[in-house]
Each structure stands twice: as structure tokens, then as C-alpha cells.
Image (cartoon, rainbow, N blue to C red; front, side, top):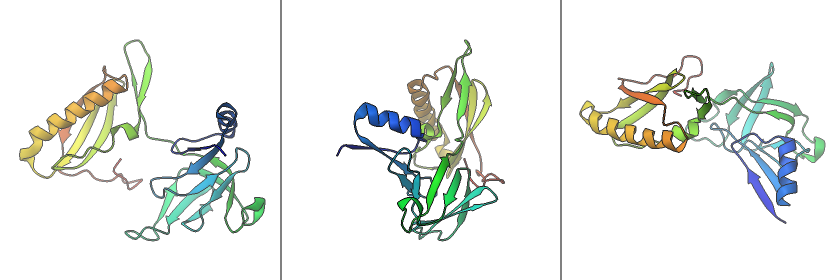
Length: 206
């Protein structure tokens, strides 16, 4: 049987059915997040999502979703609030067996940088496009949008003497990323800071 998989982006039942008709294959929708890559799986466009109860504890409290990953050995049993929305059913329903069945899945809002060119055309830069900078001496970095056509990049480094070389590499990589995404008109600055602190509300550095 032909089969293809979907992950990362939300997959609506309508799109899932359409893809199955076009490619003549079953489409499996995998559900994951940064806090746990294996949250559940949807085998059919209209069956709903089977959650991985053997790997996570997922709770809905006052309409909000909370996740604790059971296979994290570094930070075990830490619960995270997720912006996704699930409607949970009792175990054993819909042939779910011992697993929880989620009838509705509305996915998260991503932090996306939106820019606008001189003609008013809007384009975005996704967070996945600007992650993964691995440079010697670079500890952490953060993006902050300053206008419709500009942003600044904050960088924390181990040694200020490496600042010039790190800035050159960051600038070169960012110019390539902007060009590949049709955003060559976007300008940016690089600012070195002593420390990048987590957001007081979310606890994250993004």
C-alpha cells in the first residue's frame, strides 16, 4: 500500500483527503512539538488523532493544553503549556484501545516575521529558516523585528575578540537566507549583548 507522511505543518481533514485523491496513497499525519516530537498520529482524514499516552501526559485544564514528556531524561516530568487546542474523548472510544482519542486538533500560532516591500507585497520569514546558526563563540541569538522592512539580530558570544568574525559570518548567512526567501529588500543590524534572557511570560529565548 502506498503511504506518505505529513509533519510540522497543520493538516486539515479536507487537505488530507485531497492529497490522498491526488497521489492515490494514504496520508498519515504525525503530530509533534518541540517539547515532544511524538504527540500522536492521525491515520485517516476523519478518524481523529490517537495520542501517544505511552510517551507523554497530555491534559486539558480550563481549555488549555498541558504537556509533560515521559521520555526526557534531562528534564523529566516538567509540564509545558501548549497553545494547541484539543478535544479529548474517553480512552477506548473510536477503536483507540488504551490510547486517548482527540476528536479535534487546532494547531499553534507560529512566531513569524512579516515584511512588506515598496509595492505593498507582504512576505514572511519563518522561524525554521533562521535557526541552526552554529559558529564558534556564538552562545545564543535572538531576532527582533523593528519595522515592516527591517529587524535586528541580538547575539551573545563567549569572547568579544571574536565579534568581528562572528558578525561577518552571521551577516553573510542572513543575506543568503533573505535572498533565498525573496526578502533581499529587508535590512538588518547585528548587536552583541552580554546575555540573552528568556521571555518573562513564556520562559523561552525565542
